[in-house]
Image 1 (cartoon, rainbow, N blue to C red):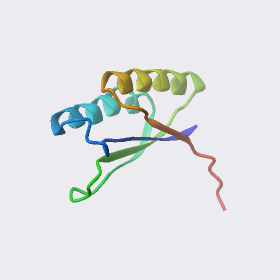
Image 2: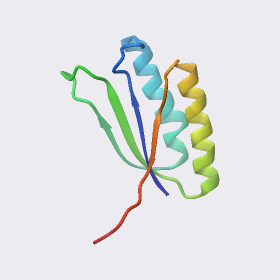
Image 3: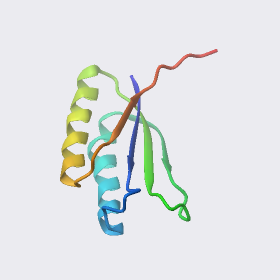
Image 4: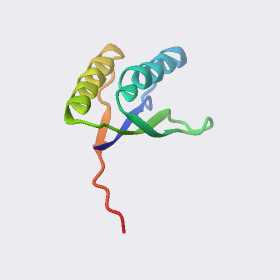
Length: 92
């Protein structure tokens, strides 16, 4: 299962230090459960802060565990959501 996990701080709820810790927490505790395919961040001059990871989970159990942890981290950092987009990949 391929999942794109995205977080943001466009509402500026988080200070720069909090944003940094949020990114580190998601990468260390959620993304690390699966196999990382790629990482993307908004450019520094962007008015928004965003991060996205493409992760392959080898089992539904791993994906479910990662989603539970993502919800816990989201709550800890007082964020409204973390985007969890399951890819429906088609090779053509």
